[in-house]
Image (tube, rainbow, N blue to C red; front, top):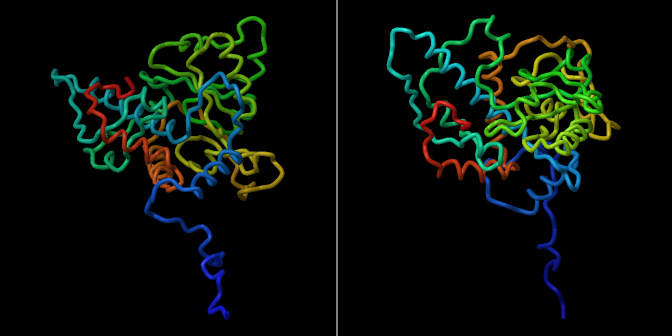
Length: 312
């Protein structure tokens, strides 16, 4: 009996074009095996997750949202203090619904940046002298565990320099700021380095000494350089941020002519926040970020926060 046509016709795959290799779909069609494999590949390429970790992790997108919340609350406090004639409490219009701080650090809530843009005009920008003063209300302690020279070259704004060698001391292995934040309700300690290699060891030591609110910034500076290259840091990124996790190949071009040291700012400027919001909005709308999609749906069902500090 003769056969008509090719019986393997339905098994043929559409050839891929290098021209559209990086084009992604705008519509999220839900979970799929390709998204799961892409997520697994991203974890293996950027994170050093080990079995039996005693500490928690915080994603870069979650930390960036926390930064936006902290800066907004502190600007509201400054505006209230400067308005001496108005004795009534300052009421801020909040037409959008957002997650509380506890939801954010638990990974079950994120800010909706599209609703954030619909708010009224932001308070006036701080004076330059104010950028070098720490925030009065800050629920996190960000610790850079790299060497002091690396910290002076590039670090995340608001970070405290505390090299990893101090964690091995017999007497007073932790800084006074760490003891002030130790297991305090509503406050966390975040450690980071270039690629988690040193920060995870320091976090294990802190957890073994009784610190229960220790977090590691997943991906470190290396992942920030790839996904949030502007808005979070001061100074130029080190060359290690543009290498693969095993540091055998270069994944992004490093400009040696554009190297400059970090400054001593303790607050984010309006320009930093603008770049951070733009980059974060792009990061959260990527189809591969399934966790952000799920948590945003939970945010839509949450109640409106009436507190002046959203992380409470």
